[in-house]
Image (cartoon, rainbow, N blue to C red; front, side, top):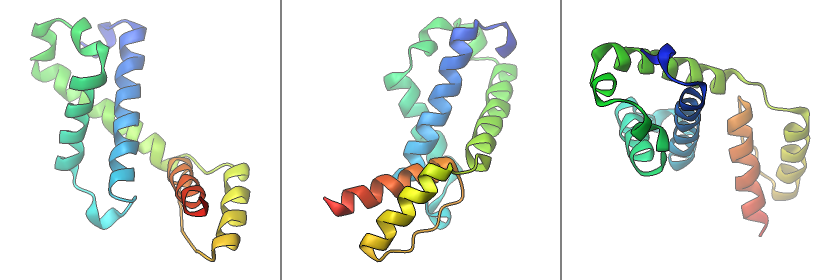
Length: 127
């Protein structure tokens, strides 16, 4: 069912998963101890209901089908795995190191998205 959707709808679904996942992680400070899949799912549902135009482009019978929900769950796993496994860029590493030296901090980050969060956090502390 998911494969039958237009490429634009699939791209929008992927974007809503990644955007809401990164926003959820930022809301908990990227703290693994605070992570709750139930809370993330609620956050994602809230995000797509309020922000995603793709929901209106999928017929109700597909939206309500178990098969579609299983395919979306699989897509979520893929997107989340990609986010968590994408290495920070050299530019991010250098900028964070420079900011941490100025601020005397020692934040750790494991992926590109977390590095973006840490970099923004440090920039905000400088203001």
